[in-house]
Amino acid sequence: MKTKLDKYFRISQRGSTIGTELIGGATTFATMAYILAYMTGAMSAVPGIDLTGVLLCTALITAISCIAMGLVANAPIALAPVLVIPNLVAGMVASGEATYGQAFGTVAISGIVFLLISVFKLRDLFARSLPKNIKIGIGGAVGLLPAAHAEMPAFAAADVPDGPIMVDYCSEAVAARDPGNPSGRTSTSVELDDAWFAGDSRRYHHGIATNCAVLSAVCNAESHFYSGSGDRIPYAEQALSALGFSQVRTDSYELRSAVLDQLAALVSGSHDVAAYTFANRRLDTARHGDASAGDAAAGGSSSGGPEAGSAAETLVFVGIRGSYGAEWVSNFNLPDAASPDADHRGFKTAEQEVAQALERYLDEIGADPARTRILITGHSRGGAIANLLAADLVDRADGPQALAAADAVYAYTFAAPCPTKSAERGDSAYAGIFNIVNPSDLVPQLPLPAWGYGRYGTTVELPGYASTRFASSLALMQQAYQANTGLLDSYSPDALERLDSFDAQAAQSLPNYCVRIPEDWDGAGKSLGALKFWRATGATVVAIRRSGQEIVSPGPDTALRCGDLLIFVGDLEARKGVVRFFSSNP
Image 1 (cartoon, rainbow, N blue to C red):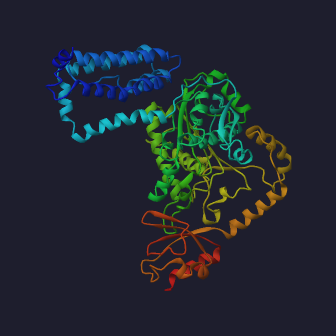
Image 2 (cartoon, rainbow, N blue to C red; image 1 turned 180 degrees about the vertical axis):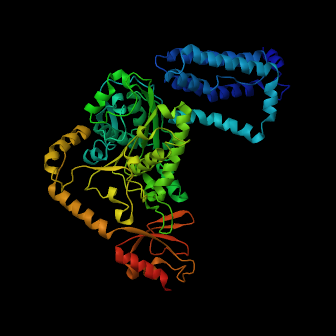
Image 3 (cartoon, rainbow, N blue to C red; image 1 turned 120 degrees about the vertical axis):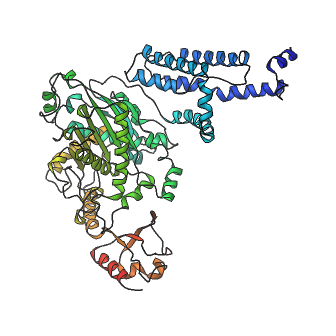
């Protein structure tokens, strides 16, 4: 028997032994076994799929192919189904673009094409024409694909719910007050009625606003999944899929959520970025009957939008994560006084990335700008980026690069800093951008309006402590807080009064400024301590931008160089002191 095996497979002739081949076969099996889990995992996104059948078919096809390769071709090559097949089938069927028969028919046609390529020896021609580095890279790419797939949660879109549903997310308020719940996991009722998007986006809609507040928190919580720690729950995929959205994309969180990723971004200076979520669903206002009446009843506009009974549109959701890790440094990336840029540099750089990614996503799903409505939301830094993105989409709405009509861009931001100095930010064209802020919160007051900064669109203020509406609204706010967090609001009038007082003083005495050190300054090379910078100017340096890199919170031993951009905090007198300091020769 041993001699027959050696003779048939030419084992000795090829310089091997039966023992070596047995070890090689076992190693190959262990290497390829992941295909069973990968196939079933990828196909699980298809509703109603028989995963036992998927597992059995994958095992049989792989076994038959490998046995045939050995017995017929007498070649030590293992074969298995192509890794992209489950993604192709799951994507086509789950999204409703094709039936099972059509999806697997596409797979059958591709198999026939590959067979013809092999029969006519075109495969060898293609293989020989590939550069060596690509051949080497393909092996690594095949290995990385299942690893990447394991990090990308997949959910099949549910039918659009007829009413509110509960979604999970993480709340810092809950985490701070519940030691047994360190991630702050909680749940809140949300709803996105199709009829709300039947009207013109340029009229405030409280239903959209309140639900976007929750969804912005959901997008923040998505970082827990990608950070490699905590509960690792894909909050955005779960929530949006339950709301009827499909093709949920959160891959931008990858490599931007773990602690090591943030440290790398801090060292490399690549922190002017953002993590964002895209999703889409069919928007059929006609299924709710009279869309205009439903919209008006909810507090929205009764004008504009598609007429009831018209063809379905596409609603695209864009949620942008707030400040996270090293991205905090981006908040200090302001243009210097001589820059012609109207927008906050750190926010704008991140917005441009999101805008380009959104273009690719809309092209991928085949969205028609004339039949597309875009809902944008974000909290804190994410709100500032969302504000710039919405303005960008409005600006291009009438041109060849339009992604949607101007009145089809719905933007609701929360606690967003001021991202622009554009003189046109209050124009009626941006009326569909609503920025909800708490007047007792310092973040939305930065960068300061005194420097010329503001937000595109309309600012909607909650009742502040000094407002005459505060007392009458307090009970309702406390009820909402308890419903969202499960905790009682620990309201303290004295604390709010101190917070208001602090904000007012900070706004006047802690502005931050930028100044570039002149190229001919004689003090170059000396440290902040040696220069007695704070004593001479009254200003505190919070960051130094040098050759595209940021030095955050520089110490007294940090040396200054000509051309450095200093970002410092202080009052108006401190600013004048800094100007005098660099005009002299220390």
